Amino acid sequence: MPLKHLISWIGRQDIEGTQRQPPSGPIVDFLRVHSSVTVTLLSDWPRDAEAEYLTALQRAVSAVVRVQHVRLKDPTDYLGIFRAADQILADVIRDTPVKEVGIHTSPGTSAMAAVWILLAKTKYAGATLFERSAADPRCVDVRNARWCRPGRTRAGVHGESAGHCARYNGSARS
Image (cartoon, rainbow, N blue to C red; front, side):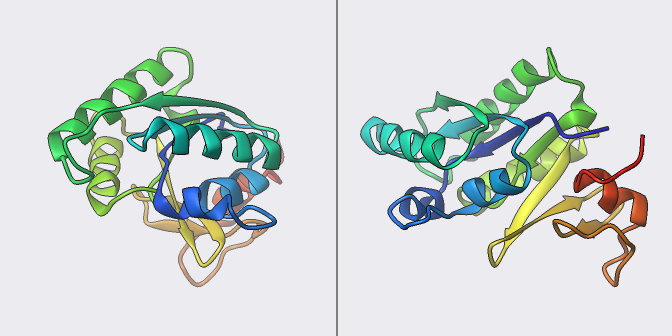
């Protein structure tokens, strides 16, 4: 199934990346490759930094973006992170099948990434996990340990199948 909805935290690289021209960072780089998704971002940043980021992101990409502000005790507050991530996933899958939901694990703290992985492997099995590597957003299908890079449509050394890569890079035949 095609990716329809992306969920992510806003991370420091995203905030700092909007100060560059052209803007960069895990989220904006991902959205340049996957421009047709709807995006829900979780943020525990101060509201002014959040608003500046959202303005810069909307200038850089055409995706529909929504930000949900979250109050955490600190950026490694596992329980707070879990509650926010679980709630946003529950909200999104009311309207979007879980197999059409992607979760970007690179933005945010390692605690945030760990919670995304736990939720995607258990309660929200079927969601696809994405990560960024050196400005190369690639998909990570944890269930089958398959890795894809944008534009790749054939099997490669990381064990990805041709159909898997084609599906996430928009070139699968229907």
